[in-house]
Image 1 (spheres, protein in one colour):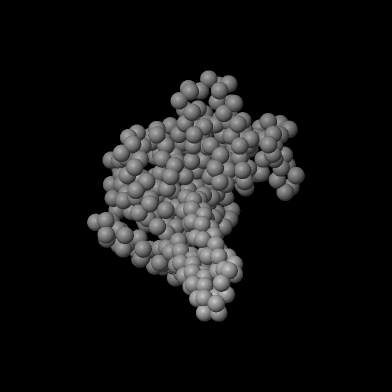
Image 2: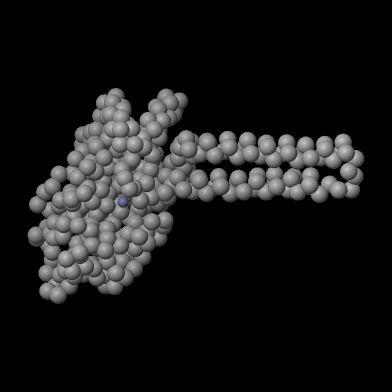
Length: 353
Ligand SMILES: [Zn+2]
């Protein structure tokens, strides 16, 4: 089982890594579609779930994805219509959240951006959004002048003070009440588990302040605070929330969760260690190339140091070992530098938006 999974995943990654040109991307999509057909449809928490999230969100794909359709309470904005597919779990989460906000604020319509492409894989310009577990969700806004709740057809960039304007000069305010209701809905949704929400720290603080002033229960506020904590990519999220969910239970072990593993989702240490081991076992192929290159370079440096030592011995240059020592020191520095680069690469694979 473990072996076949490794082989299967490496096949998919080989397919994904050849993507580049438009033609190659079409070809990749085609191959991913064929892979998708080979994956059986599982059952999920008592309900049939068609989809399977495969691999990591920044190197994976999604089989049997579900399309997020426009409804009275949400729509996919212009420019994101090729990336309106996700796992059944993610799509249903967005629908439930939009419905729950509209239930208390009639007329609300959520502006949704990118999820994943139909079969996943690279979704320009994102690094992630490849495995049906990421979604960009626009903010609920009000008109700055009148305070009316408005539906906007695009993402609106917000200042630290929660104000924004569109190209036509209309001005908006970040609607902290409805945006908090949205966050509360996805965090209280017991059919999915939110891994993180990328959001600018100033907007996050406004939401936390609002929740406290509304007397929201401390456990929910704490959970929001953990999932929205600053991480790579947070600062630039001034026009939308980027929400990622953990692998749906029935998509494992094909689906791989990168850290972090929140204690309110993974309640036992054993469960956490298991995820970590799975993630470590799973090594994206791009790490292999630099490692080989570095090893070759290190070999060259060591051979060079050896040669200069030999040369000096042959020439009888006693007392002037400087060149040899410098070359050896360079080889040692390369080794250390190599370690640093490895660590950096490993960290970047857990990446985000
Ligand atoms: Zn995103």
